[in-house]
Structure formats: structure tokens, C-alpha cells
Amino acid sequence: MEEKFDKFLMNNSQKDFLAKIAFKFLKKQLRKLANTYFYEKRSPSNQNAIDIFDGMWSSKFPNATLLESKAKAKAFEDRRIKWAIEQFSNLTGKCGLELGPLEAGHSFMLQNAGIKSLLSIESNSNSYLKCLIAKEIFHLNQVNFLFGDFVKFLQECDEYFDFIIASGVLYHLKEPVHFIESMLSKSNHFYVWTHYYAKGLKTRFPDKFAGKTEIKYRNKVYRASKYLYNESLDWDGFCGGPNNFSYWLEKDLILDIFKWHGFEINIQFDDTEHVHGPCISFTAIKK
Image: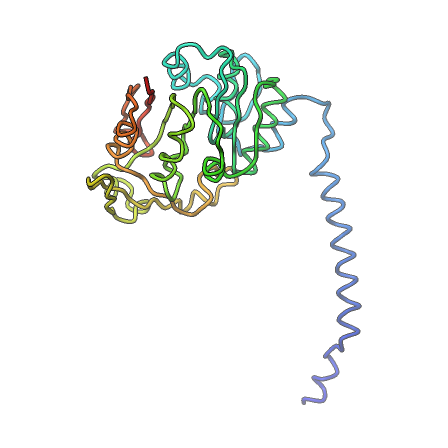
């Protein structure tokens, strides 16, 4: 029986021969796929560029552009950034730093406010490429988009900026306290929008929060919690942090860090009923 079975076994040379045939076949099929997927056959347009990331956008383009991203967030017409610009008084000729531009919606608004320059750092590769698409569409010539980790940038940077925008980034970090402290010497004007940890979140989102922890800061104890991305990681357009979890800080800790370093806090809103968890929008300005 074993002798009959041995007749069907292939030697190494036969295996190599079949592997080469299979590789040539797959290579040919991939080339065909590339011709249909990686090349655009429609007439050139801005919409074609947007469609490269079809179904992966988070931001809705301004209605006047007639461009369709299939997204709903009004990042290019964001009332939060409009308010922040007003709080900063006059941004004409100012040089700023933006951490996590996502898809350049806020960058667009800041350029329209008359800035001299904006350094905008994005660590998500898809988001970075979408920023470049938006830059081309809206001629964001005052904005320099860089691809990389803004946490490491802040650690290594000795530049000073007229203002810093940190919208939607704090709650995506593993070490948010260290992140805030690393920003404080880089500017006297900050805008922050972030989710924060509060009592009852474990009940509201039982699969998202892995129990509360305590953080001691300047002899005061605050609450925080590990946040799990879970199924969010399965979305092709995922634009959260680089890890599968982050830490959400208690609101008082976030604000107190700024206050202890001499910043005056002005709160635009504090939304405890936000669909994804409580969030706060504020400026921190050192007079």
C-alpha cells in the first residue's frame, strides 16, 4: 500500500517546477488586476483622486465644491476650529503646528484664516495621503504635511509655534499626560478637542473600557481608563491611534495640567452625551 502511495509523491524538482508555473500564473493575474485597479480610465478630475480612498473618508467636503467623499463629518467647515481661530484673535502671518490633521479639513480652515505657515504632522499613512489629495485640490500652499509620529517630534523639537492645534488626538494615545507636558514649552496658544474618561462609561460601553485606573499627578489622584478599539480596527478607514488601545484621562486632569503651567482655560463646550463618549472643546492660553 505504501509503495502505491509513494508513486503519487513529488520529488523536490517536480515541486519547484509546479511552484514556478503557479508563480507565473499568479503574476499574470496580478498584472491584469493592476491594469484594472491601479489605473484610472476616467477623465482627470479631483473626484478621481478622492475615489482612490472610496469609503475610507471621514470628512465631508464643502458643499460648494460638489465633491463627494461619502462621509458626514464637517471637518472643512468645523465650528470648533472657527471658534478656536476667534479665540486666538488674529492668525494673519502666524506660524502654527497641527497634530493629527486627519484629512486636512482643519488645515484648510487655518490657511483661510491667513496663516503664514502650518506644519501638520500625521502618522496614519492613509490619512497622510488623503491630506496630500486635499492639499492638491484646495491649493494648501501654506501647509507642510509631514508623515511620522508627532509624539516623537515633540520630544525632539526645539521650535516655538504661535499656536498648536491638537484636535482629536489626546484620547488616542498610550501616554497622554506625557504628551500634554511635551507640548507646553512649544507655544502659548493651544486648541484641544478630546474625549475624556468619566464615571459610567464602563456601563455605557462595556466592551470598550477595561476598568478604571488611578493616576497621581502633583500629589492629586485622578481617574483614567484603558480604551479598546476592538472592531473599529476592522474598518479600512480606521484613523485612531497606532496601538489597539489608548488611555482616556479624567477631564479635570487634562485641564489641571494646563492650569498648573500657567495657562488660562476657555471652554467652548463640554458634551457629556456625545455618542462616542463625553468630550470637551477648549483653548489654553498663557497671557
